[in-house]
Length: 359
Ligand code: ACO
Image (cartoon, rainbow, N blue to C red):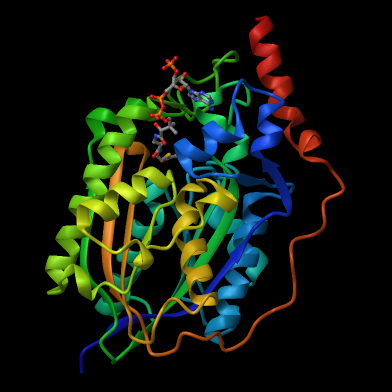
C-alpha cells in the first residue's frame, strides 16, 4: 500500500504587542504611505516571550487540531533563524515544554525558506517510514536582530510562530513536487554579520540584519516564480489547478509579481503580510492556518508553498491537502499577557545600537 504524509493539524501563536507604521514614523525617517505602498505592511508583532514559548503554543494548537497529544509525536522540526541559543537547539526547549517525550527534535535553518525545507523533509521521512507523526514549527523572534535605526530593514520584520502536524496516510496527499535551492555565493546580500562563531570574542560586533533590499527583491521574484512553475509541472498540474498559493510574506510586491509571472488569479493567493510583516520561517504556517480558518482551503485542495530568503535560499512545494479542513479540537490557552509597552520591549535594541553609535 502506498504511504503518504497528510497535514492533519495547524496552529499559530502571535504575540499581542503591535508595532505599527505610525510607531515607526516616530523612530526612523519613514511614513505609513511609503511602507504600505512599498511593502504592503501595516503592522508587525513584537514578542515579550522567548521564541520557544511561541513555538510551544503554535505546536499545541496544531496538535489539538490534529487530535493528538504530545506523546504521539515522533519528531519535532523547529525551523528558525533566530534560535534562543546555538547549544542547545531551541527544539530541545520546545520538546521539554510540550512533554513530547518520545520525539526527536532539531532546529533547521534555511532562513525564510525554512518551513518549506522542513515540510519537504518531514513529508519524505514519513513516506520513507522513518516517522509516522512529525510536528513542524516555523518560529522567529526577529525583533532581537533588528536595528531600529535602520529604516531599510526595521519596517519589514516581526515575531511569531506557526506549526503543522504531518501524519502518515494511505490516501494520496502531501508533496507532489518540490524544489529546494540556494545560491551561497550571494549569501552576503542578506545576513547578520559577525554573529555565531565567525569572529569569536569580537565584543563590538554588530549583530543585526543587513540587506541589499532591491537586489534581494529581484532575485526573490525570479526564484519564487521559477520554483513554483517547476513544482506545478512536477505535480502534473496546470496553473489553473492551483486552489491557493501560500507564499512567503516578505513584500506584497514580490508576491504580486510572482502571481503575475505565474498568470495566477490574485484571488487564489493568500496574503496576510499587512498584519504581521515578514516573520521569516513562520510566515507560511501562519498564513496556511489563517487560510484554513477563513475556509480558503478546500478538501483535497491543491496548494503551492513558495519561499525565498537569506542564504540565498528558495523553496517550493506542490501540496495535495487532506480531506479534513476543520480542526478536530481547539485550545483556549494563549501567550501570557504582557505588561510592557512596545517601547519597553524594544528598549534593549535602542540601548544596544545607541551604545554602538557612541563607540
Ligand atoms: N522609508 C522611506 N524611505 C525609505 C525606506 C523607508 N522605510 N527604506 C528605504 N527608503 C528609501 C531608500 O533610502 C531609497 O532612497 P534613495 O532613492 O534616496 O536612495 C529609496 O527609498 C528606495 O529604496 P529601495 O531599497 O530601492 O526601495 P525598494 O522599492 O526596493 O523597497 C524594500 C525596499 C521594501 C526593502 C524591498 O527592496 C524589499 O522588500 N526587498 C526584499 C526583502 C526580502 O524579500 N527579504 C527576504 C527575506 S528576509 C530573510 O530571509 C531573513
